[in-house]
Amino acid sequence: MNQVRSRKPHIHCITNYVTANDCANILLASGSSPIMADCPEESAEITALCDGLLLNTGTLNPDKLSAMRKSGRIANERHHSVVLDPVGAGASRFRTESIKSLLKEIRFDVIRGNLTEIKALFCHETKSHGVDAVSSDRITEENLPEMINLIKMIASEQDTVIAVTGQIDIIADKNHAYCIRNGCSMMKSVTGSGCQLSALISAFITANPERILESAVTAVCAMGVCGEIALKHLAPYEGNASFRNRIIDAVYHLDSETLDRKADYQKF
Image 1: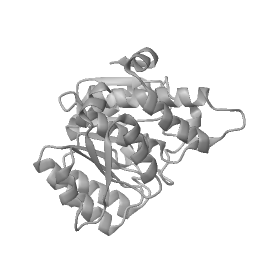
Image 2: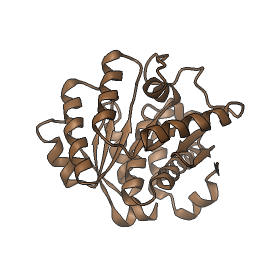
Image 3: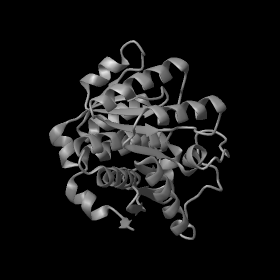
Image 4: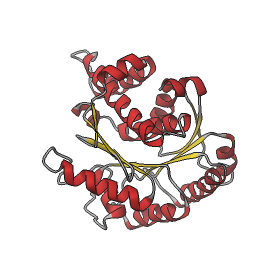
């Protein structure tokens, strides 16, 4: 986290219009600098100016897909970090096939999604009814060993870090997995909390390119800790809109000592 604030990485976000403002603000709160540009005619040029790239498929269309392809190629050529948030994978044929085409053309350092999205891409399962995980795709204490093995297998096959977030988060590469139990249930009531997390992961891994897995884990812990802090400071009359703002405020004020003390994770 301290590296993010000292290096101040520029992150190019090709994201969805539902959460673009929140992604930009959480990047600013973390100490990094966002640039939002999804026009195919300029996307590669903008990517070349930045340090990291986030591709989010929440509101996908052909023009945005073209921009993602161009930006992804230039990011790979320049060895910039690239994060994929495959929002809604499995919800439609166009979206799923488009994301799979990106996986074939671009190397991603981290792929972050819910379990339904990850299964739709890598396990040939299509139970999605939208952008949220279906109820049967829950990571629990009972199925945790099975899920750890599954995520590590996918990470090994894709040669990347896979971050699956939910009630229990699993972040893994082919060798190691971390389980994180930070966060709170109210985070599900904020549209785009996962999108914000993907943006935060982009900043953390861009500032720490030699430690991709650990940086992704730290970002997930930070987001969960900030959710807990935001809930604690929520007034009785406040709801999900205030909670969203308080998460961003908590990221802005988060220090390494607080994160180290409150992070709840296990390494496997």
